[in-house]
Image 1 (cartoon, rainbow, N blue to C red):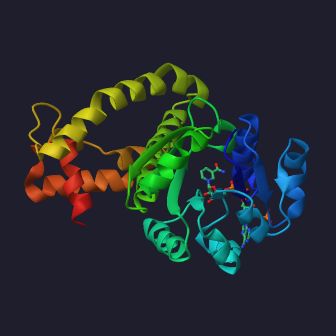
Image 2: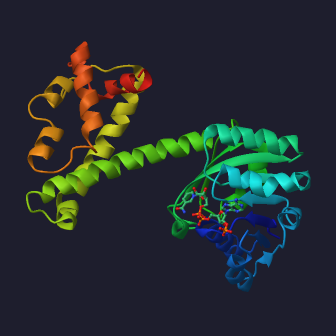
Image 3: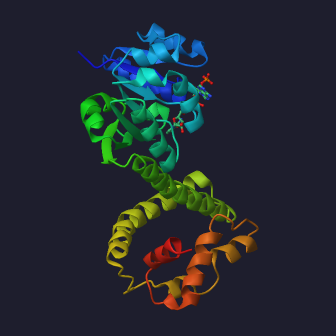
Length: 289
Ligand code: NDP
């Protein structure tokens, strides 16, 4: 028999989490502030709870997937006492400090364990092969529910510090937005020469990014761990010589704003006397602003 699970919050993500639980045979109780959002899930076998207290009381595992940190407290504060003996998994996005605060609050009210999670997927990816969720906080609670949580996607416990799932979530998003920002700029710049974004992307941008990501990121990471910025090829002085991205972009009539901060940091690092170093050494400017 599968673990009964309660889902608090039936927005796009809460609905997807509920559908994954139902598809895997979990008795699933749902609660949402606007109750009509439960209707299609009840039709698929979920049990509607009329109050947050009834929802929490229904299952040993309670999963919150609400809008933000404040909404988690809005829902749970009035029913804190009913958390006693249950495991709370918070999949609502928040900051590392908010996760730590919620952990102390939940265990202070007798929760058996608290785990914070960062969902690395969109709702339509939940339960599919590419979804994964980072968890941090109580190792015992994670171990009790690892198989239950795996229905959402790959489940990885990153640390007992409840803040680390949120920290790694934001770190991964930083990497993603950096790639998206650079790619949008590339499409716009190539577009000034008449390139169609889709054709440019499939024939040139994707092959280039795939080669650079796979070929460069592990080397950057190794250099950062070793503090080894010696550049046998492609040093910062070479990379910043000549016209920069911003100048070329503005001459072509487009904004250089998406690439300007990186270019500015590269030039500053050279001006500081590190022109013979690898681009990995920019991490020093990030670490010590
Ligand atoms: P939605 O905006 O679709 O849903 C928000 C949910 O929060 C609704 O159920 C809403 O209830 C509820 N809510 C908001 N404020 C309150 C409140 N004060 N009291 C009670 N309930 C409240 O968001 P998602 O479902 O997309 O996202 C949920 C969480 O999942 C967020 O933290 C988000 O960052 C995270 N997430 C989402 C991803 C995505 O791609 N969608 C990806 C990764 C993480 P009501 O229906 O009554 O308005």
